[in-house]
Length: 433
Image (cartoon, rainbow, N blue to C red):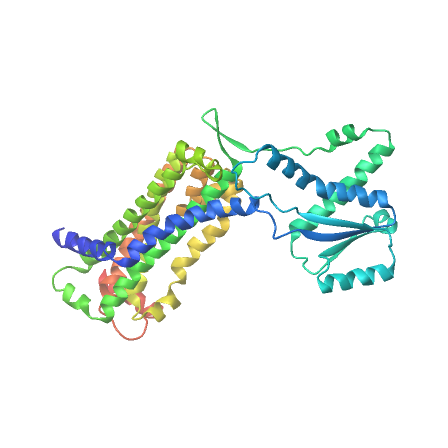
């Protein structure tokens, strides 16, 4: 046990004092915050400048109605800016659209407008002839048509204008039409122990960010175990180490030592993450108002990181003992990477339906469990017996893999030359048994 402790201490101190550890520890919270805050900031930002578009229609009333629909959001925003000026130096936001109307709906006008787009005089034009409206198919021409949000906004404006016009023709007043067509805001709020909890978008963003962090950590530190073995094997340091410790002690020391580094870094990140969800900090910034990391999620992250790390690091240790260089390691590491990558693919349907049969059975597979069971805990905590069963299956699988990997490790760390074939691996397992 003393020799194993020395290996653990050496692996831990060597890595925790490195510049890479310090830099990664500082940068990852920045990355986590960015994945949550940047999308929210981008959604609140206005588009790049005012879009100058032309509405072409036989009926000027239709064009004017579409214009009013497009101008309505920025008129409301201007009213809000006027009633809530905020900071004295705050600049008013640029209008979304500058709109002109023309009733010359002929091919000559279409050609001129296309030339204006090419020359940069306008950004686009919307063709709203009676024939196009009757067929429920209008065309928007522009140089930049990759903004799908703009396309949806234009389509909704045309549709709302037509509906309002038809309802007005049926005798409804303008106020009645506006009330009828006013959109409904729907907020998805999770119920936690009989009380309202975080919003749906908050649960999704926090869960997805922590899942990606868990995925990166498990693979990164598993790969660190494999790389450490390859470096010591290629430099023949292992031959010196094996004169003082057994192969089993060396394997255990490496896995526990590197895992302790990962756990230290994870604890630091989780403490930073918890700070984001403190009521005082969240209330001081609107972007943080929906950020909430539940305590159960923090505990589950630590548990499934440790279990996932030991599960995958045993496989990476065996792979490291089999190969002699980083190039060979990249070619053979796919058996360890595929399961966790597949778990990431499955995380989206599990995130949406955490209690479905798919979520239950896949989260019970030990190689998928570090990701999928953690997702279920974050979204809607499953019954405790499912969590206990999942952890038990992971521990049993890790124990079996540890025995298998230790046999490969015992022989492979002293083998040099080409990679072993499957028959040779079977012989290694037989000799080391």
